Amino acid sequence: MLAFDTECHLFIPGCGFEAPGLHSFVFEPLFTIGGYEFNKPMLLAFLSTIVVVGFFWAAFGRAKVVPGKLQMIGEAGYDFVRRGLVYDALGKKEGDKYVPFMVSLFFFVWIMNLWSIIPVMAFPVTSIIAFPIGLALVVYVLWLTLTFKKQGFVGGLKNISGYDKSLGWVLPLIMVLELLQHLIIRPFTHAVRLFANMFAGHLLILLFTIASWYMLNGIGVVYAGASFVMTIVMTAFELFIQAVQAYVFVLLACNYVQGALAEHH
Image (cartoon, rainbow, N blue to C red):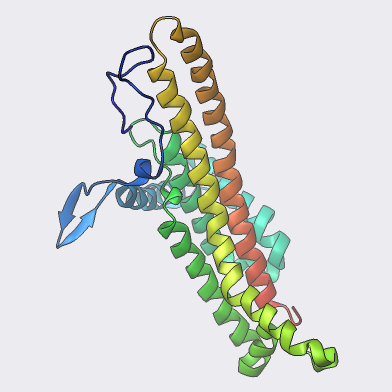
């Protein structure tokens, strides 16, 4: 779904190049249910939930000792997150209880990113900042809950504020900085890192895609071909970035949980 004039090409008088921008991330409601409007990103987020739940249900709903192809793929994905992320950060003993959450988070973020390169869908849900913020808040609430549960109320406050009376006169400054880091900067950067990468990636793909069509006229076909090659390159690169950003998002979530469970952090 590209918002540009398909009849406009290079060398046609009065036809300027309509570059993508913020307007490319604004969608009209597709339908309304009970007074709630659903646009394309919301629908894709809902479909992401169905895809993740449906896949793991199909893979493990009737798990066998000798796994079939789908179960093998599911086990490989599950084991990748469990061993490569959760166990590395939390260890096996503490990490086992958080594996289902982290696996769900990883694949949910990845699928929402992956819509960007799927024909017709062609939009990464996480390029709308509300979705990364919502996911980051879930991790943030989990981190706060575990911090106070593990450290107690007083111990949790000390850890979050960086309280250490041995710091002397710099203690107030350290406490302010620690509170800013833990309560504002950490959840903000957790969300923005995912959002910014997906936003920029989608914008670049849109730019080269629209440019390919716009220059497809006369001698401009040479430039259109070069732009189309860049579209393919950027799409392939985006496929890599989508997985990396899901990995980084969950890696940070694991590190935050590890920090909450540690005796001293």
